[in-house]
Length: 362
Image (cartoon, rainbow, N blue to C red):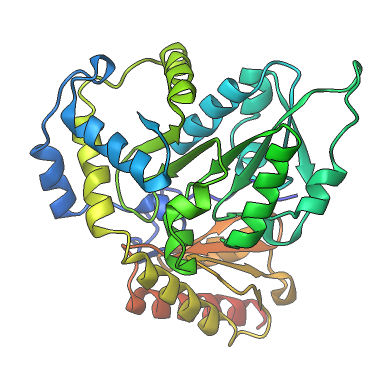
């Protein structure tokens, strides 16, 4: 099973060189000058009272984008996931999700700690599962079995290599879940990467989802913010949980303006990140000791076993040359392209990684 990244950049070590290429995550992006200007010019008001016009504009736009009736602004995607689970589930309920999904591996056990729900991990290639697998996990309805209430999917599937659920598979799984009385939720952290890669609209991808959200802090370049979308009744109940977990963001228009800027300027350019990921994969395939997975979007995973290095050891070696990557297990490395990494940076990273592997074999 995939685990959360176990390597993090050592910011306090002043003996290390400055970061030259940051492939640690697309969460590392910094707001551009244009985005900062939009934030400073934003109209603001009290979000809780519905008086922040910039937040309202963002929520209206996201509801339309995903084809839902209502939306709510939140600080992070993890909060979107956890609030959705809290609305959909009751203590003791069971969620069906891929065994490597973010809610399983990277949210601190939130479903159990907050909602009292358990997650049944489903297997499948590249972070996805099919309808037969989902139906095979359904329990007979009896008093001593946990009620199964929710099916959750992740678009793109992070631990699956940034893979994109094909629309026909996604539709079949989610519509089949509805047929057997289950609610459906999409972790859309990198939904727009999937939209750009597949040429399918967000509305089409979210059509059979009872709840869906988009994160603006990854490839879209905003400093914070995610928007959760669903029916009016769902968002109304989600607001209650938002109050319980911390309350309103008040004059959040400053942050929402960054998200609106991202929708206007940073969606189509995700194709450049995908191209850079392909270029990085090609460069790394020149290193025979590395087993490189085929990237579909902006995530490049590779296995270090053949080099004699653990993932952590390789990450440490390249960090000392100013290249940051993350690790997900003993031998699996993740490199993530984003708007702050250009083609020259990708070429440099490939050279540094190749050199680190070569020196390990000397």
